[in-house]
Length: 243
Image (cartoon, rainbow, N blue to C red; front, side, top):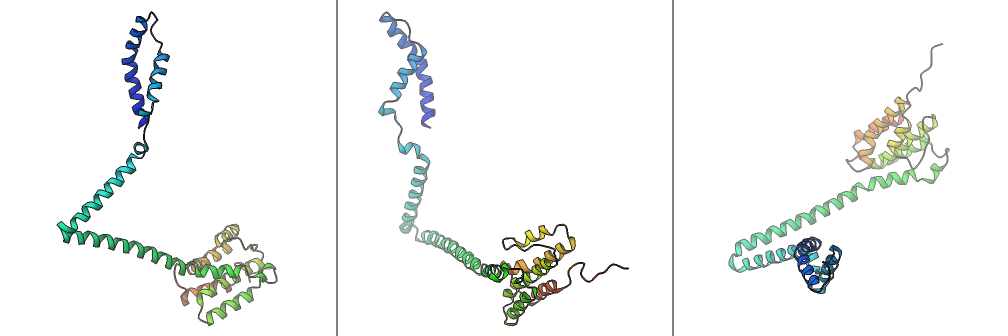
């Protein structure tokens, strides 16, 4: 804003000051001032302290909003005496809005905390030190842990063990390489050349991921579907070519 004002002032001053300066110089027996001399003279004037801007000018919008808010608060306070009913309505509406915002934030945090429990259990399964060796990545052992969790009524806890059981079966069959840093979808991408394996894995994830990531509870039906896919023959297993 200050730059625009200075530019406009400079343009006007150039038109008005040049003839006057030229007249003064001719009276003194000198030639008319050059354009550069006029500009330097005007800039020296504009650089004086009285032409400097203030912080209030640079923060004009913020100051305006603050003043408007202050005026609004004053008007609402004035209603307390002139119109108590309207004053109570406004205050009640503001209080209800604040409570709704705080309640929504609290609900979101609480729901997020519940949803984060299952992924932590899944992560704990992946970080089991026994899984560092191929011998420790035993599908039967994973299935046994899943069955123990399900028998204890912890169906959601059984889901990650079924995930590992199917994954380790695929690994032992030479269909995929285990990597604790991979996600389920990254394993699916690694199976892109094996359509049957990839379909089996994605069908398992359709039931596994919503449970593990807190989108829905682990029902008995969902657990049965995961168990069936984790234990059924892999695509191509048990088939033999005709002699």
